[in-house]
Image (cartoon, rainbow, N blue to C red):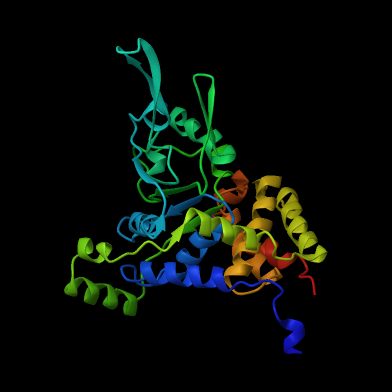
Length: 324
């Protein structure tokens, strides 16, 4: 029986790398296991992540630590109302020595991009991210620049403050693989946070983080993920969930085909992280909430009734028959 269940893929290198990253980040971050698992899933699924939470729950810190544990270029962009698209993408600068305009690349030309408070910039600045998030390329002054992999956008936003913020366009939200909502730590976790900070300050803790993965190792892990098996009935399960979001009476906007493809890819990555070379319906259920919660829109009537998008997602997932 054990021989039948044995995985066909050698997932040991992937497991080792995932555990090493978790171990490094856990030197500073207490708890947040779900957040870490989803971030690593997104990296392996070539996705971007929107992290939402109140101030002080380590959204930005976790993103910085993840970047620190990966041997690649990292840049951070603080979004503000006066930020222009050229501040993100770059601009042409006149060189008096050569008497020609030269394109000076902006901070978006990197591997891991941390965008802090993404909803504080207006729509014209958000539009600068559309091409690069979907196609991993930037077109400026008629020239297209292909970006190196791995390429990942990690964006944070605060759900409480509304003044001075802008609603992200639906087309941009659809380009994020996950929206991860970060809550407060539990009592025991908070005690550990306080004890850790008694021993050393944050700067000293961050210095301890070692680089674990490089671009080639990430590429190798992604190639393993691409070999994870998905049965036909699981594909049908994903398709039925997607179709239900488009016909559900509580929803004004359902998920796009991009979302169903994203769910397929993310489920393969999660299965590999959990040590399996095949996807189960449980993987789909686990990822449905962070993958759909920012893509679906309630009807005005349901919104006025106080219904939550999370409840509708759970109803949809529970309604579709689980394949056996």
